[in-house]
Image 1: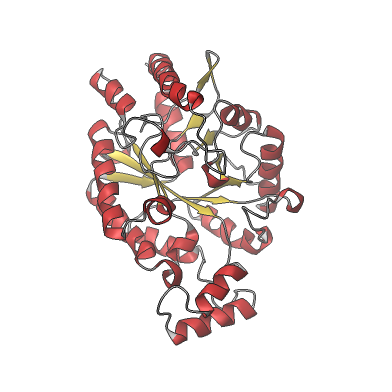
Image 2 (image 1 turned 90 degrees about the horizontal axis):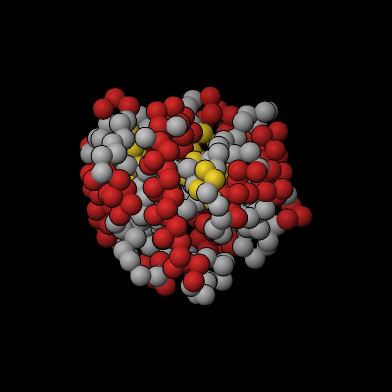
Length: 350
């Protein structure tokens, strides 16, 4: 069934890309936005089509669907612009004690107090027997686009990342701003991250700013030696950019690529950065997506940035992640990371 399913989804995907290819409207990052296209991205229409024709995905331990949990680490610790924002109280009422802690952190290299720490994410996920993927930047300094990305010390994170790997979490690459269609850059960033982690094999990648160019991004990901990509999404709307909530092998020029695409459905910044909705509204939107994924036994891939867990800057958005995991667990989701999902899908569906 693998070939038939992937060939079919490839043909249907081709229909979906036609409108994108014909659209001349792009944002400042060269991305196609959902608002510029017709259709409802919240409906996984291709997955529903496949489900109606008999495809069934079975998940470990009888789970109804999968929730793939991911975190893009854009900053390992707050950059100066965030520090000044907090210290000025520019985000609302910031308690004096919190300002003192933040100042201590900024004066000591964030060793005493780091509001962007990965540890708080691990603590929450452990409550739900969940694991996730941390997508980490390894962009060489000379490649930095300072307008769109900040440099952080990868060695600062190394021991923390190795610990979480040892405990079942995954580390993937969060590729540089200009790497989304460049296999040589992707390969170099992958090698740098792997060497920092003492030879750990990095399996997957997500592009910075969700930059994606069809079919160049997939071809670059394959050529760079990755096993999966999890970039495919609209930044401005939640949902399914190609109507798929199943992982799939991309088809380019009638060739099935040797990578898996794990479509991204939910990103925190979509709600507070683009749609300007409240956390309660966002949670309800995610629930509706989850119901649709559950009906077809698909995958709901979630991106919650590590900095969003800083309540001083993001308030309820950080706390909302716990509510989301509670809901997904109660709906019978397999709460896992991209690497586990890739291994399971390839073992069972090719």
